View 1 (cartoon, rainbow, N blue to C red):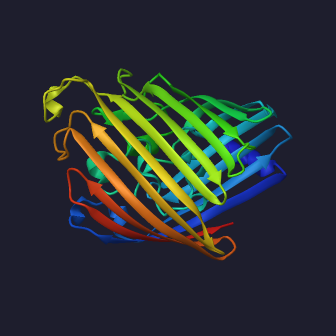
View 2: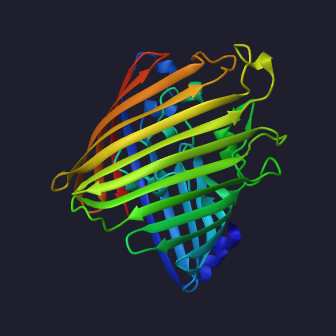
View 3: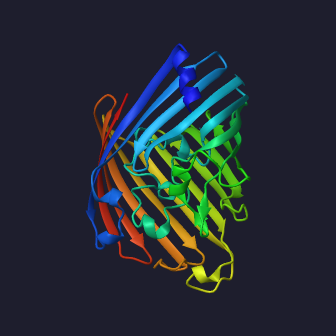
Length: 360
């Protein structure tokens, strides 16, 4: 990291961008003790990204952010791209999984909160469920090969990578440990993965202005003993018709658990847990300076329940979101979202998020 910053300091062509996001939730809760502290009051996220061009083919990228997880390097890598069809990244990477990883910054997505499968600090009952499937951002150190292949009517983007992988214990991933101990791997097996995205920029149908479909996968081990594996897969869709955007993803994570019956509330039959998630969103402009969005998302967990948790072996969450974004000036956006949460194991919850985003 220090070496990369030193390299950037001596390069001439440097671009800097960033964002500041302030969020104020208003909670209408029936059980405040079950809600995370990050939802109870005002909170902020900030980020600064620097890109330095060393040559026509080599660049350095560093992004620092501050949020509920403290100060962290979301990315710090060198990029060598001799051609459009082939490039290599090495360092701390934004792991290419799904479509949302491209726009997880609050300045780049329309809602005040992230889709539920990628939720972090603003997920209700996050302590009960150990967050969702893959909280974004997910940066990790490793090596990535990528490229873009163009055809007459379609474009294929590919990513192949090997990264250190998320850490875990006691039968599940530990996202806090993964962030606080990111400087070293906890076992000798890297996580390998890939992503393919097929886009159709010019379609024969006049209604559709863009269409892309993607598929992603991840596999590796997460425990210190290098014995328990986790596998993730997902598909995603983005379409633009007229001035309206349609986005959607469906994904799953299957996680092996240790054969330790004393840790669980019921007899072990299958030595794994499975999480599934999805989101579907429509957004677009209403009038000049005012945009709208509607979103439906959810997650489901199935498998043995550890002692101390109160949810059932098959637990589900659904969330309904509606919102407005208003831009009073260039690079400033006000966000207002209402969310209605339903739990099959707990009572329903309502929350109103008010956000302010500034970019530079």
